[in-house]
Image 1 (spheres, one colour):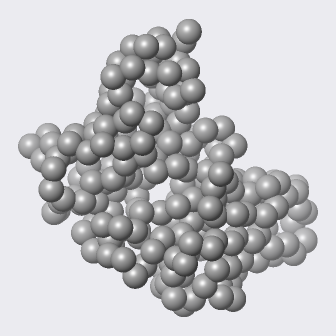
Image 2 (cartoon, each protein chain N blue to C red):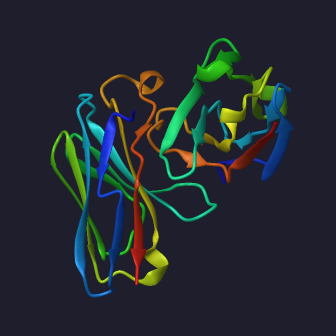
Length: 114
Length: 116
């Protein structure tokens, strides 16, 4: 089945430390991949997306993600985390040509300690 | 601020009530979506409207009835819900006309629904 997997349910990092959130995908062809962030009681905000081309994608709020076909991964990174980054992060994927039909991973909750 | 507006923000309803959730966007998007999100779970797709026509129904029970009266509005009519239907209901929109590389979903902040 086509899916995305986030192996980490909960991650805690110190403010100022670097961050990497993992996402693995399972699609027959190169999928569309996205990272969304959700603060408590809020909707989802798009951080970045990958469709094709450069495998290192820059997003908002200083986030970036790297598409690695050999590892079927699309990990999210940030060099220095801020306390306001504490939230739930969802990786999502869709088949080529059906970007509207997203499948979300189970999410990773990020806690930031001061 | 989100560009997709959902009302109400919170809704409590009994199992015999009829209520509606509303969603509005003014970005000119021609695709609109309803998602359901249970606590500590990812969003699950319910319905997709493309050019005001229902294009995807993910086997949602008939007690949920979507409606797209025009390109800016999306409603979700609720009737005879069960307590297990309590969840955050998210509306989203995308630019169906642009090609997939320019049409990520824009989400509203959701309606927190509690069924008693």
